[in-house]
Length: 114
Image 1: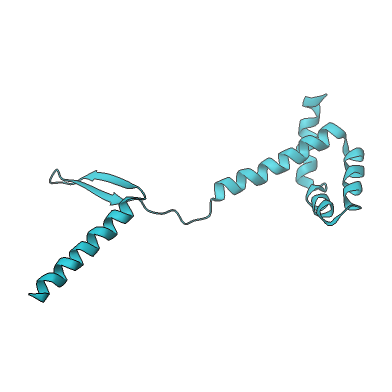
Image 2: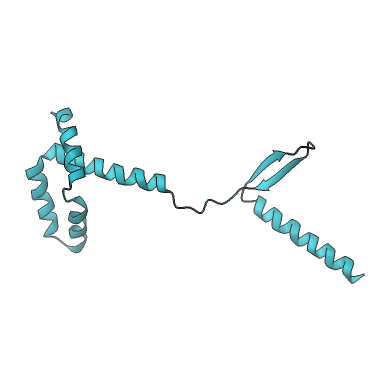
């Protein structure tokens, strides 16, 4: 008699586990026999590389736009002013310093701004 209760408890635990997984989202599929089967959605644990790429490209375009608007000399003066400030400003100056990518983007945007 105890074997029956143990198997029943095991079935209940399996149902509870499946219900908790399905509560986070599910995908329904129709099997070959016509039965609709619900399967939990897979978790995406990978790092969003596409979002990070868009963020980096957007940052370089932003720097290029500012450099094209201000001009290279004034841009360098402002970065130097940031570099003489607090630690946070120095980190900003490091991130905003002119690099070859920013200079090429600036050169391509400059004719569009004038």
